[in-house]
Image (cartoon, rainbow over all chains, first blue to last red):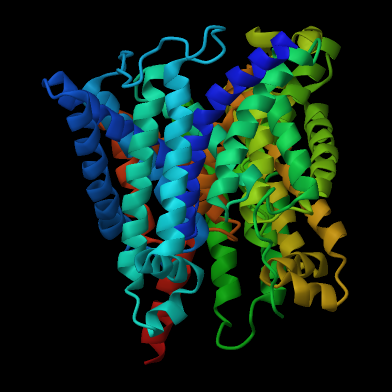
Length: 292
Length: 343
């Protein structure tokens, strides 16, 4: 029982990383209707910007806020400069453009800041939160920030005119334009917000996995898995999906005899696919009904 | 051997090309294909063996991309898991040759058969998934494959992390004047020509039209009496067959297989090749193979430190210039040309 609890808590901690990323993934999916393969690299780049600011002597929170704002601007710029011109291209072509962006960001980060592993500070400290050492303060902080972000996003999308306009622009661009919403700018705004959320995610993840250009690859993939498991149309589902992936991965590694340790990622992914068999649009996603 | 498939590719084009205002097309197509084959046959006598090896790899990648194209371009099903089928084909060939001393020629149908079966079975659950959800399921396959190949219980067959060494095929006795690399090139060329010809025939057949109808409008296709489940799973199987044969050829060419060469990034390369060559274009697959093999090398030669960034920039430029890939660009250019000729 103690072991089970321990593994679940450890799973929650890794799951929080995936959940952060899954949230950013779903955000941009809502705004642009594509999965952004470069999301993780954008987050990594933002984290490096914060690291650079701190290396120049800025305090943590200044670097944090500056990085979030710069990422927002960067996200808007990427949309305006790179993706605006090809927004009518076939889906697979924009997928390849994402792969190109991935490659550019990854390689330039390696060129500017090299590939050595860097430590990144945490604002929460690393002391165990309770006496029994199940979860430390940073992990708890990460879970807290993820849930807080989710709440803010919920309020933004449900309670503000801008949030409503963004949802309309993503759901039905033509009708949205007819009622006077500037669809192009809504998309750019979605990119900016996704980049900013990615920056927060990156800065929370970096203390755990350490900062280097490839730090996000694994995280992004399992963030995707979490987002898909929870349902791409549901931010709350994506966060839950991220936690679920972390927990399943940990439990499979500990409790499935013989194959567990070696194949734990495989097992986690297979379980997710099995779940999708029964819920093809994810656990909390809406299924799309098409009209003939 | 190399002249037979020429007719395979060209004949249906002559019969089925659109009759109106296109009377020139079939012969032009004949000529281009014949010229390309002639060039391909002559190359080994003029090119260095390193370049020959690279071209062999281009053809192998082209074949793997064709496999992906049959699924994605013609049937509209996404896959990020084709590295797994490529790896499965390579390992089937390697295990047969290394552990059971099977003659290399027989490893190709074996690899294709195994991949067909696995692809067909994987197609069954894939039936329930659409677009990104299918992408995730196939992605799971791509991530799982290297781990399964490394799995300790299978080490007796797969060689674990070490991988397996395979003997490069020797030229047959009556062809003693050519060396191993040249033979490998011709052997690959022959296989690739036969399989490209077969694919061209397949997509022009009744079956091919059913497969494409499912891509364009599954509901209408079902209403016309096409068995969606059967055709989609079969397409998955055939697609895996193609990529598996490419994997087996790849194992013969590199003479070595190791688990981590069949990772998710290989799937991404296939996808890039597919889009660059042109989704739904058969000759485009070879262009995709060229891009996937050469452009990373070119980027690396410009700057080692920024190779990835340069690769990304080249990729972006290509997408900006040709959003529908090389084949789409070709069609666009042809349409322009014929319009100006009429005017």
